[in-house]
Length: 141
Image 1 (spheres, rainbow, N blue to C red):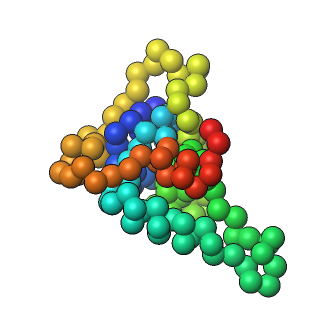
Image 2: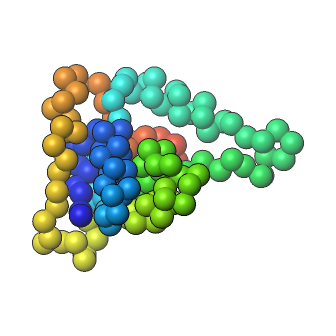
């Protein structure tokens, strides 16, 4: 199953993908940078900036290490919807592939959209794309 994340709400897409992964399917997400996060731009940036400042006080080089790339954001969001502490969840997570843009091997193939997870469901224009958030946090992709 190949899912096009363009104009899909990140949380709704992640829950749909997690359900499919738990059923045993191989899922690939393309255009991860085009997924959207709902909410005000400034509030979203502020909350993620505060999240980046969380470090280990004893030894700051130990972590936690925060990801910045859009494909890592989407992958981690899906991981949050899986029972990752159990073998079933870990095996499902291994079946997930996430790409920025559309790789050459998927060009010309049928890309699926998830019904009910589109941008038209928001009913507001307050959202940002994962690419904007990643660039704000310092990602180079």
